[in-house]
Image (tube, rainbow, N blue to C red; front, side, top):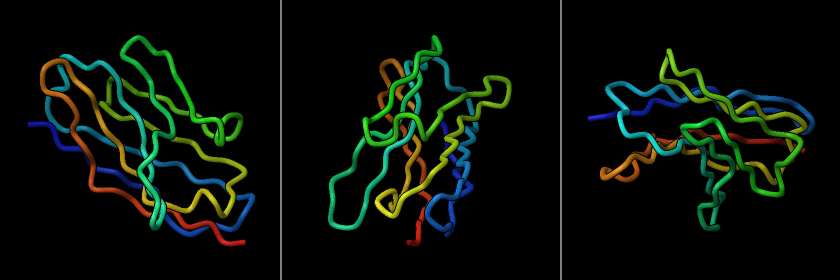
Length: 116
């Protein structure tokens, strides 16, 4: 059973940066993609960034040019480097892995708060 442990969230001023990490324990055999969703208060969860097993990445429009997703296969860890943060980036950020047959596994979430 894979477990995902996120870290790196916190409080930052607008314009600042944070790096989120998501470490997977256990095998992620059959990985199709991994990435990050976020959910702001009273809003639906949205996909922020994802990266496929082949290394292709996608981003939601609002974070393009500011966020970068990367993966360290040796450490089974995915990162989200967030720069030029805005108050509207405030949300709980969840990492996930999507695997063949097994579907999605989610982390517990990490709070990111951007003050204006």
